[in-house]
Length: 482
Ligand code: SF4
Ligand code: FE
Image (cartoon, helix red, strand yellow):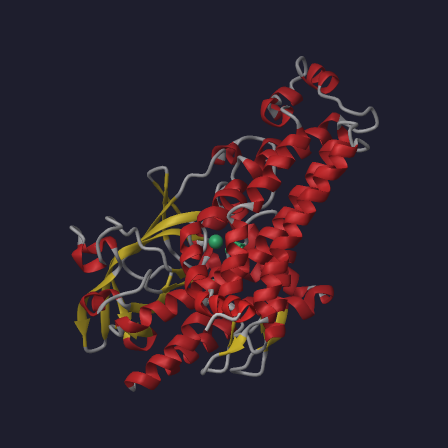
């Protein structure tokens, strides 16, 4: 098949049976659930765009494994050009959904596991790379969504995995069998878990030899025996249960995160890509994190484009578009947004070829990109709220707008410029509310801070990669210090 259509993606989800819980109840299928469906729609966009001739070059490419046409979200990057196209594709998907479209975590995990497994095999004589290559062929041919799972709950952050009071606070191997391993633990904040086909697990941090049971990477179907997930709440999520779509802000698209629990899950040998080689956990974590920090220089920029557009419309509908301070705030928003994009492109352009043949981003620049993402979307959101005005958080509900008695008063008093219907003004206010405070704020705002690693994680990488001695030598040589 190699390329699924959006409709085929929906059908494929209906054939799976993941155990999903929300508000204490089991959800039969994410496709038909009003709270989870917007998340399905966002991922569906990655299939729909791949079918459109105008986006073919961006959304699809040629597999280095099979030579067949595949979705770029399943690609093993073969050049710096590929890395840049990835960022451009993410910006496009952000523009089309104004939400997290989720499929990047899998793509970033593919590329990190690909190169790490190769180097582990070289050092240890293992066969993880062959396992993974076979797995990637399956993923590409079936055009699957894979949830890349890194973040463990971590319990006491001051203790190593093996030293935790409860050993399951980091996902670990609890039984070794001739045909595979049994794992137990959990992965937190799992983006898109309810509408993924597979889950690809990686260790969450650097590991010492004592933590070898925790140095495990593998993939299993999302509905494998023993896996279940508890969906995380998002601000304003139950608005999706109300009649009408105005108060949702984004009527069609959204994202989702879940706590995914592995309650004694069997992993067969050919689905294992790291197993006890604890010294390679660091390489896998750093490569995955750097790819995902690059990703934010694409997706957040695309979502930012929508927010900037909404802020400009809000100013226009308020009759304030010509004010010089309004124009200047929009310039500032664009400046910040394009600076994020520059980081995403720069770490791609400066990428390098790994021993396995695929391309890795420039680690320092990817971390600088993500460090900016921990700040600039907050400023962009602040300026959007500034331009929207307080009505963004105080406007009456859609039910009141539709009410035969109250509606005419809402219409009359919430009107901005006369030529724009009140409903359009309210739609834009709700969209800004959604992206700064509502369900999409998970993907745009707080995820900008903590997604792909919290700010301090990037600062550690920036400090490691900055080569301070070389800089000191430069200063010494300028003034002639030996
Ligand atoms: Fe992709 Fe961005 Fe969502 Fe991460 S936050 S999965 S990079 S859209
Ligand atoms: Fe993310």
